[in-house]
Amino acid sequence: MLLQRGGYLNLRTITDSRQTLDVYKSFGPDLILLDLHMPHRNGFEIMDDLREIVPEYDYLPILVLTADINTETKRKALHSGAKDFLTKPFDQIEVLLRINNLLETRRLHLQLQEQNQALEVKVSERTRALETALQDFMNAQQKMIEQERMRALGRMASGIAHDFNNALFPILGYSDLLISHPDILEDTEKAIGWLKTINTSALDAGSVVKRLSEFYRPREETEVFGAVELNAIIEQSAELTRPKWRDQALAQDRNIEMKLELGDLPIVYGNKSEIRGMLTNLIFNAVDAMPKGGSIFIRTRPDEKFAVIEVEDSGTGMTGEVKRLCLEPFFTTKGPGGTGLGLAAVFGIIRRYEGQIKIDSELGKGTKFTIRLPFNSDGEKLKDETSPGTTVLPALNILVVEDEPFISDFISHYLSIDGHSCEVASNGKEGLDKFRAGQFDIVLTDRCMPVMNGDALAAAIKKQVPDQPIIMLTGLGDLMEATEEKPPGIDLILSKPVGQAELREALAALFFGGLPVASPPPSLKPTTPGP
Image (tube, rainbow, N blue to C red):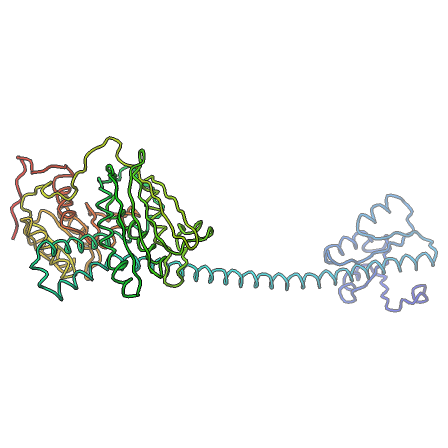
């Protein structure tokens, strides 16, 4: 009656405490008025049951109405889950006020719960949106990285093609002249000079990939440099680049003069091909910097413990920013036609030689590169690295396994000129069949071949004859050396292209166990060639 007068019309009254849970489940009350001392089940037991079924997030206020005024009872009721406690007899106004307070608290709690749920939905949606945005960003970033990688690979490929073309220029030019004007062959001295230039350019082309991959590779302790006469290399480089700085420039209505001022220099130890490549890049860079023609000066002089090389042009010069960045890989001011690799390769070579480079440049007044390379301090005289006859081999029977006929043909010529006999197979399977049918001192095999590759061939041969010497001649040689990759069964790796002297030394190193002898030991007899 009190609650009805207070406006609470949706009421359920239970006189049997055993019905409490059933009524709760069907009715879902907002407030429970609970007596403590009842037949069947007391109020404490009912509150224990309610804790089991009422979700933790639900705020169900329980107002205990009891005649028990014991303080301990009150504490126990509040501890069991009651939100408020009134003792009988009670004031009806106070009861209504307490009910209103509890219901207001429940309303606020439910409102807060709804807001939290709405917030969780928004957070979940926002999280999904952020995850989607993050994934989109990562996808875009990966795509950008892939695009940049492809651009870098494109620039690298362009740089490799650029340096190859530089090396191939004199090969094509001089060979074309010899073919179209065979009468030049009658001038033996001139023809031999051109052939030497072609040979040198071919060797330089063979070292392009290795050189480009070693911008900042330090010199290894075991790496051996040969004695180099810098002035001779400079004169050779000027001749090798003549088609570009003279012929091509004249075709473009540009007149470029090359002036050499070479002083007396002591020995510098290094790699001739690398130094030629360095000078070639500097000369070509100077030619590109003179769109209206001009002069290139190359000077040499000794300076304490260094040999000094100056390459100066009268071209357009560089700004301070360009001068600062010009040695960085892939930096170029030449647009799509530039690779950004030439000067970076120059810088890498100089660092490997523990040398120094200085750039003096001003817009409109040209550029001067000053390079300082350390020379041999003990004054040792120059030794001719190309002198023949340093290693003498007995006649060997060699199996050549190569799928490119023109390569196997000139390898056979190399070997026959040195007095060796050889048999040729066009793939690994044919090579294995010939090996099983004959006796060979050395097997020389390519790596990438149809039917059976060089790795499988070497493994099969070593399974049959464990101590059989095997050389792998492959275009992947530089890469295999850089990654320290050596297939099982391979004793020595040579990179294509290979010259006769290099092949001869490789055979000697393998046949004599690496001993630098000029003739075979008396106890060593040539192996009898097999069928």
